[in-house]
Amino acid sequence: MSESTYPAHTFGPPTPVLSVSPVVLPAPGRAVDLEVRVSAPVTGSDLPLILLSHGQGYSNHLSSLNGYAPLANFWAAHGFVVIQPTHLSSSTLSLDPGTPGGPLHWRSRAEDMTRILDRLDVIEAAVPQLLGRLDHDKVAVAGHSMGGHTASLLLGARLIDPDDGTEVDLAEPRIKAGVLLAAPGRGGDAVTEFVAENYSFFSTMDFSKMATPTLVVAGDKDASTHLTVRGPDWHADPYFLSPGPKSLLTLFDAEHGLGGVSGYDVAETTDENPERVSVVQRLTWAYLRTELHPGDSAWQTARDALTADPDPLGRVESK
Image (cartoon, rainbow, N blue to C red):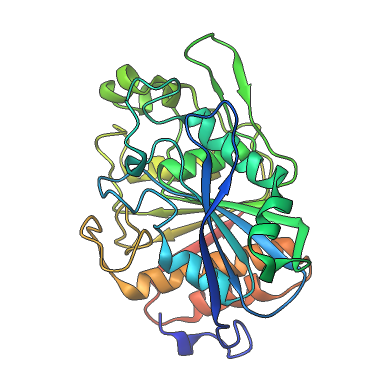
């Protein structure tokens, strides 16, 4: 889908972006302090926020505050402040796999996002160009792959803590909407034996209480055979197994990288496709724009443009 497919007023011209990193948030009790990247348009006020959670690929630096530039740059250039933490699972930190909560630090990842919301004043002080420009009441979360798992928990999904058998509720009420990109689906018999044995928290994922409005983005060629025995439809579980309102963007011929959302020209993208990335950028932006600004027509306009395209790269359904 070309940019010209969209009406000119839908996105407007991109605004130059200010990006600052690392902004360090003191984190007593955490293995290391929390470092984040903050990206924002250089102009504008009452700016909504997106908390962006990185995945867990094999590249050293994509799984950190330095990844996901195609998304962070686009969102920031079109009116959002994007905050990206380096989670404890990042290989850039070189933590011992035996560090408490490791190796994927599923709980700490979600707690990082709550810590960010608790310390927005610290972030604004560290980036004085932002002072007084944030709308603290308009907050969204987005995440890719393992980051999608993190975002799911913040949006209301539950799991059973494998250490003590209790149900874990990490829903963050300050988050008003979310985007799940190639996120894990349900547990039980849907996950591989390897996952059940090594990452047992995946085995109890439950989306039945994930009530926050969410756009689920899934590739119809994203088999993820190391994670699931089900095939690509597993990544759509957060849409089908949660209550509405929800929307599902299915990308045609897309694999786990969704065309290359984790970085520009990165080796681990198996389905590199700039047009597909453009669809992800624009549909996710439009969805969050409308969810955080009720009555805004961006989401409907973007959906209509996708439908009208003679050779669409995906389809959208909602409930």
